Image (tube, rainbow, N blue to C red; front, side, top):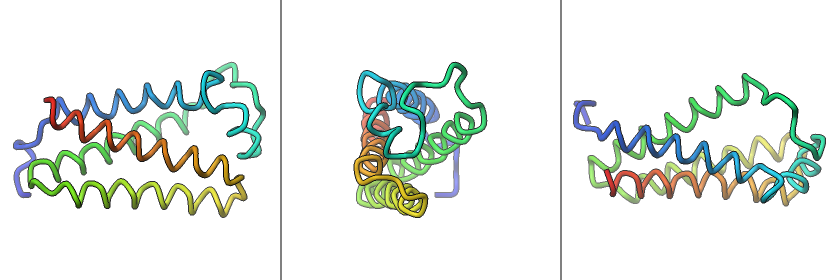
Length: 127
């Protein structure tokens, strides 16, 4: 893949944005916040103001993963996309395990990355 102009930048951006919005719900009281926060050593109530650095890092990570998925879509390499998603999820779990997160929190984190990757693949198919 030598030409970034061949990528579907709309699919990349939409995939990252939708994944970010899914994360808002995923890590909210609607879904997993309370038990995930306890398993992560955080207070169970959401912060009054979202922390800027973790949010920025999340946006960057989602854009990077979505770009990798876009590259694999251009190369018709779905297996490579799946491996990239599972690799990212495994790194998240590994880091969380070093931080002594609970199994519940690790599973929530793992599947957020997997769901985000699926969203990104679907966006590549749509756009």
